[in-house]
Length: 86
Image (cartoon, rainbow, N blue to C red):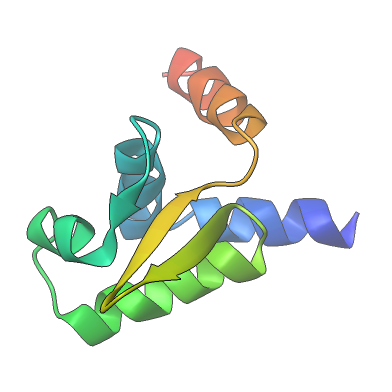
């Protein structure tokens, strides 16, 4: 049950939710993710770290940039279900 709580806590923040929805379209480098958000690189890094620790995202370093993608797209089913609850 600990893993489920970690996932739900990670998704409970609006910025992290926005990041996951953005990555639902495919992998992006951190530079592109930073273009879509209105806060600092360090703030973005903290949110990405939380999503990685919850095993929602994975990262791969390529040259100067780190690329992020969703580990398991079942997480999008969770988001879809939540949207239906509106």
